[in-house]
Amino acid sequence: MSKHQKIIRTLRFRNRKYIGVLAKLITTLSSMGADIGDISTVSYGELHNIRDITIIANDEDHLSAIVSAVRKVPNVELEAIIDEVMEIHRGGKLKIEPKKPVETIEDLRKIYTPGVASVCRAIKENIQLAQTHTTIGKTVGLITNGSRVLGLGNLGPVASMPVMEGKAALCNQFSGLHMIPILVDTLDPTLFVSSVLTIAKTFSAIQLEDIQTPSCYAIEEELDKKLKIPVFHDDQHGTATVALAALINASRMAKLDLKKAIIGQVGLGAAGSAIARLIMKYTGGKVLGADLNEEATKRFKKLGGEVSDLKTIMKECQVVIATTGLPGVIKSEFVQKGQIILALSNPFPEIRSDDALKAGAAFATDGSRVNNLLGFPGILKGSVEAKATHFVPEMFVAAAEAIVAQTPVDEVIPDPLNPQVHLAVARSVTKAAIHARVTQDFEI
Image (cartoon, rainbow, N blue to C red; front, side, top):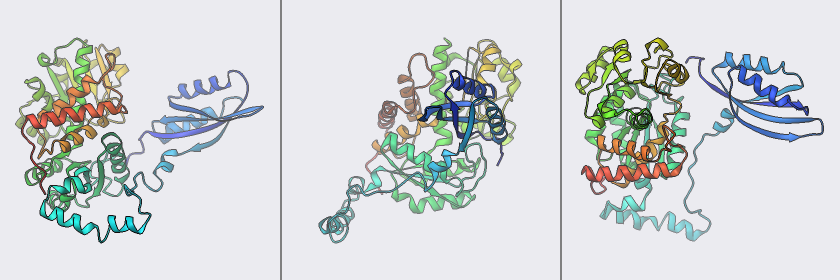
């Protein structure tokens, strides 16, 4: 794992109650490139105040430089460097609780034996009751082998669990679905698929997460064939959905007709190829694509894309989306006046938005703004409520258009913490699934 990963720390300062001391401290943090978050007052005293300031540093070396600088600010003492992220994760981020507490013998008899037997017999007679009388109808499996985690690479299944717990917590908060993380300890696609098939009856949908290419394609395709519940690879389709929404909004802001624009996709991995495919579905036109991996370009060509290269795309395309994972690969001198650039690699983009705009881009944003959280809760909820058997591109386009409709006029995306956005996405996905005739009665 690279040590060059952004880190969050809370710095606790004790400062003299002199006018301008806090301003000097904030100025020092800013001058050192710290991304300043919340500032909270811990205590006021007669002579001193104690405050917590949360910052994001680029890496450990950057944090050390920041700490060294703030220690030199007059009348300020750095009391502690607090790792709140580790504390939040202590004991995990999820818990399972009964919907109704078991407080009496009568409760026990109804929730467990002997009362539960009648429910089991009823489901045996009418399997559709499992949808309404068990948690199956509201439960999604989140399944990974940890072979491609965020920007961290192949961590393996256990080290990927914090990411899975985070996704599950967000899904529950914004969709009401119960998302259960499942760790599959194999890199063999065939064994991965067979493992999922043995537990699939627990779920109404499956989300695949953080699986390396090209295995993710085969796994999704095989599960989609063999299961009668929707299978969703968020790294592909969630990213593509939110990227399309951002692109539609960016085109509006730049006064560009997206359906007539020349569009290029740099980086044809799981996210990039899915973005290009969804854009082609939306616009009806071709997308130019570039990748150093020959297998990736072959897959892209089969999808209907036109293989190109970075320099050609930067020279000819009005819209450029980049998902290469290579910081700084797009140089300022490559940027054409009036281009729309979405540099989506995290945590460090292919080109900084400020640099792209200074070089003449009409619009530029990065992966910190284009957040998958806008997509997957509503996409899953909509598919489950529609009782969809599988996903079709029309469902992802509908989700993107719902995100666009929820976006304030001066923004590229809406607030991902706004519950109304997720509700709108879910409703649109449900309607699209019904219209596409990919729904059926619940079946196990």
